[in-house]
Amino acid sequence: MTHTAAVSPVERDVPTRLVPLDAALLAALAASDLDEASRLSGLAVPASLAGERWLWELRALQLEHSPGDLEWVARLLVSGDEVVGHAGFHGGPDDDGVVELGYWVAPHRRRQGFGAEALRLLVLWGRDDPRVRTLRACVAPSNDGSTRLVLRAGFEHRGEVEDEHDGTEAVLELDVA
Image 1: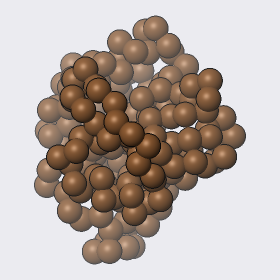
Image 2 (image 1 turned 180 degrees about the horizontal axis):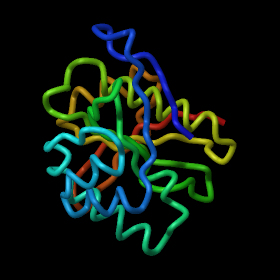
Image 3 (image 1 turned 180 degrees about the vertical axis):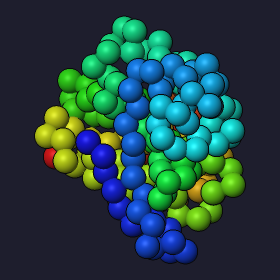
């Protein structure tokens, strides 16, 4: 499933979409092989995505144990024919129908509305899937931009969690059932 929405206020005529990754594309990203990732996706994958190698490696390992998560874990965030970031969930819905979302925008495309578009597409995706009851965003307290973004999207603060990699994070949730 590819989700599409209007882009930033600057480029309203260019659609933004989430492009699914297959195992080969994920492996190329995990190896920081941007030429192969570009060939497989048919898109110019920016060098900044190589800085996200830790995520691609984590997702590749995750899929070894839980192959069904492939449809959930990561998609390229594409505007027109340009990869501007990635977005997805940490896995499929848990037993309570909760999915945790995440998004990243390439540094040269930040503050242009792409984070908001990624979030909007993820919310649409969650609302479209009957297995999903709650969308969760865990945000570092120092990340004011993401906190404001998810609060504007209707998420509510539900507490804090200690993440082994990122430290203390605010838990924000949106009920979509």
